[in-house]
Image 1 (tube, one colour):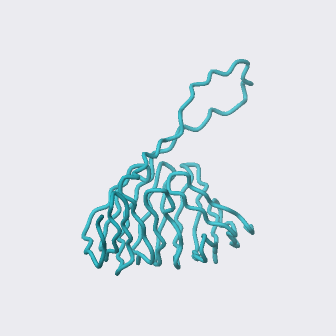
Image 2 (cartoon, helix red, strand yellow; image 1 turned 120 degrees about the vertical axis):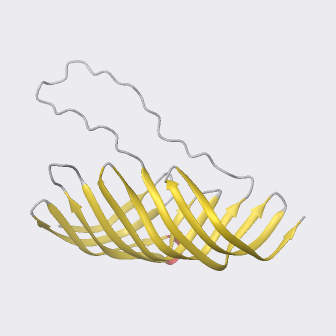
Image 3 (cartoon, one colour; image 1 turned 180 degrees about the vertical axis):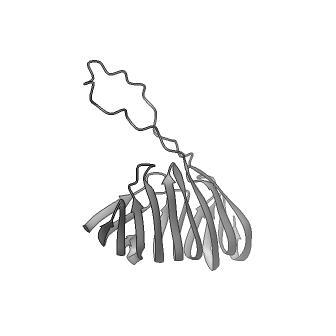
Length: 193
């Protein structure tokens, strides 16, 4: 199995990985991809490998990536370009994204927090459904984040009169749709008007 010029996009995080390439082979119900690569805006890149399990118990994922200046958080209120290892794991019901990352460039805009809404759920009742049609799959559990992000003079905080640059040692935890940033940030320089 070969992926060539594929694309991944997340509306929650603004992540777009393009030019995804990889070569895979099946080992029973498991699809093993080796030498996965892709690019992000501004010259960022991800490389790695991953396994996708199509067993009867569900769809499992275990992807190990190395990011290099990859723009993986691109929203109006917060963005981040990072370098370091990332692991994406799922057993078919939700999953987790973890990593120990260096913040190459980050931006946080005060007063611009964006509430990320989930897609609306529309109740649909179908009529005249064929008897042999399989039942639709239930919605999966949410995905969670467990990231350690460090940066030296790489976090820019603006808005509400503040224009500043910070060094940081942060944890990003919680649901992808409602994560929390905690830790320590030290002011390197800045102005307040």
